[in-house]
Image (cartoon, rainbow, N blue to C red; front, top):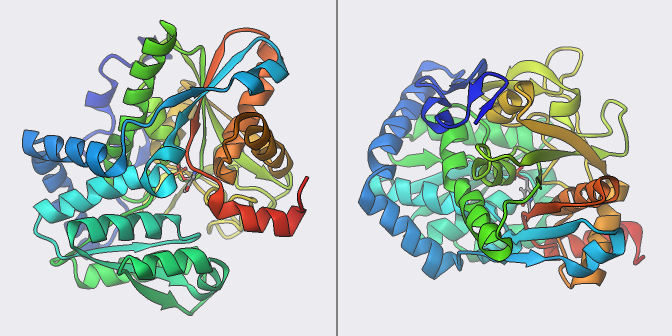
Length: 405
Ligand SMILES: *Cc1c(COP(=O)(O)O)cnc(C)c1O
């Protein structure tokens, strides 16, 4: 299928190019030391991850440890409450550890093991990526070092406890604003010092090449499974698919299964409290081109061109940029990016819980909220949503902040 001059029949052969570019987005903006480390990872990715041994190992781990394939559920009561559009969801909340993040962490960990590395290094904000990576490290018998700002450590006590129970070492980052940005810098520094023994594991389709490609490829199991399951379930492809976009990994993996199909694709960004600067994290809807964290993409900037302050009720979505492939798919029009607000996400959180018996992650609730808006608008057809994770992690916060509705 051709779309605005881009040939999607051969898309995965051509994007990214050998330097990690999706059109003008992507690349690896790094100093020499780290560049060498990334080149080693890229080389290993193409030789190891494409080998039949690696592929069959990962397939077995997905089945026997992660519990894949995750099912698709038809949301019958939610659909009925809205009219004639049928809404379905892909249940990444049923993936081991309760979200999609483990999909790329198990891949990254297996690659580290094949490369003979001893340690996995990463940063974490809300702690979700840290927990998924600590899980992978425990499974493979690797050390795990998670960099985290003091502010986030205080806020995310349950996830900090999980990481410690899983045997990870937490490195507390005490300078600057003591949150995600400082944690990224600290983790990069630790990796630059010890890249012979360790591998850096990015938590989304962001960062320097090869990570946007590698994380997409590991996450594409979600889209590939979903396409096959939906066809088997209904005899057709979905008319519309929807996923929430923070850094963009659950959405990119899900979309990857459908890019070459006559399916409308929607990425949903967090509008938070509204369109005012600082009140949202909708980088693809309101941002401009720029380089941060080692890659070129669309980002929200402050007056100095630095990453802008962002906000969302969903801590997994409050990142000032998104992966370069999303920027590319936005520009060529293959994916429509739009928003859902905190309030809309909260409504969806309760609707799904009460009509379907599924408590969604507040991140995923943004995608459900958008599917609800689509269903009201379209009047017929189907919508398949990627339910990226379960909401157990959000319950205390939501009750404390908003009360029971
Ligand atoms: C981290 C997270 C997200 C956002 O990350 P992406 O890379 O955009 O997928 C979405 N949903 C859940 C449940 C998460 O934990």
